[in-house]
Amino acid sequence: MKKKILDITINYEVIENGEKNILFLHGWGANLNSFLPVAKELKCRSFLIDLPGFGESSLPNSIYSSYDYANLIERFIKDLNLDNLILVGHSFGGKIASIIASKNPSWLEKVVIISSPGIKTKKKFKTRLKIFTYKLLAKFFYTFGLKKSLEKLRNKFGSQDYKTSKGIMREILKNVISEDISKELKKIKKDALIIWGKKDDAVPLKVGIKFNQYIENSKLIVYENAGHFPFLENFDSFLYDFKKFIGEINNG
Image 1: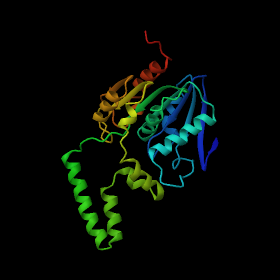
Image 2: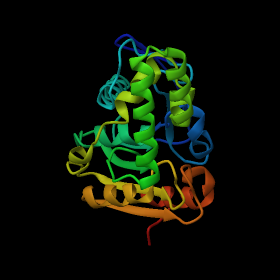
Image 3: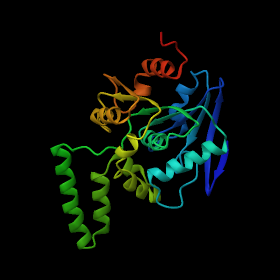
C-alpha cells in the first residue's frame, strides 16, 4: 500500500489478525520486512512501514532529523485514524518511537523500544583514538584538496550504516547520530517496554539502562546471548515478553 504524507510517499503493509493496532518502525538500513515474522504471530492489526529513504518509500527531499521523521509518522497515524495504538521501534525506529511517545498523545497506549540510540555516552579509548585519527587525516586531506583520499578515509573509518548510505541518506545519518533525546525520554508517561541484547556492540547496554532510568513507567528486559537484533536473535523469548506486555498473554 502507498500513502502520500506531505511530499513523501510511504509504503506500508497491514496484517489483519485482530483489532488491536500496532505500528512497527524498523531500524536504519532495513525495511518493513524486519518485523514481519513478529507481526504474523500476533492477534493484532499490524502496520509495517518503510521509513522515508528505505524500502519502497520515497526519499526525503531535505536533510531530515529524527524529529522530522517523528512528525511524519505522527501525521501517518492521524491520517489513518489509528487509536489505542502500540508503537514499536527497533534502533533508529525506536528513537523515532521515543520522540513520538514523549508527546504522550491520547491515541498512544504503549511503546516498545528495542536497542535504540539517542543517548550520548562516554566512548571507549579505542573509539576515541579512532575518531581522533580520522579527524586528523580528514583535515590534512581536505586542506590539500585530496577528495578521493578523503572519501576513501570516510569509507574506511565510517560505520557500516555510513558505508551503505548514499546521497541525502548519508547526510541524514550524519545529522541524526549527533542527536541526544534524553530530555524527551524523561517526558514519556506511557507504559514502555525496553528490550536490549547484552552483546549489542552497535548500541551498548548502558544506553538501554539509561532509557530505563529516564522513562518513568518502563521495564527493561535484557537477553544475555543477543546482539543488536534481540527480537530476532531471541525470537521466542521476545514474542512471549511482547505478548505479555500488550495483553495477549495473561500476566497472572
